[in-house]
Length: 121
Image (cartoon, rainbow, N blue to C red; front, side, top):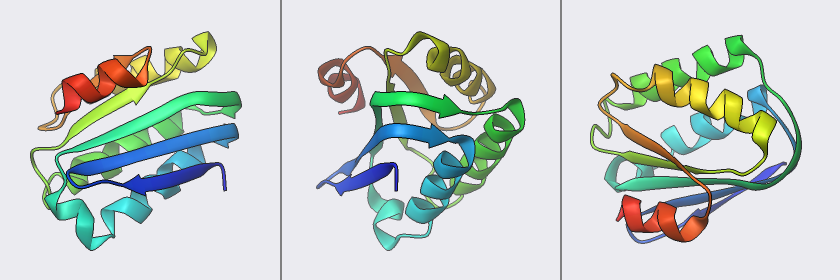
């Protein structure tokens, strides 16, 4: 598993490490959307700073956006903070953020975890 969930009082911090794929990110989203705690959290902080390699396609981005937009029905006020510094990965993250622009979820990209938490809370 290339990620670990850390459930917190008001949210979730998810840390991705090593090599990740779009399918893994999609699966990670399905996992949290199916958790009863998801309905009551205020934020998800996705930490990609420990990722060294990735394989994500445009189709993966569309699937991730689609599942996130369905999750709006159970938790319509979620903030999604994305922390990343790996330049090639940022291209895909920015594509995700662009597709989520019209979603009820707020999303933003950060260079460090402290700024992400400050924004999310």
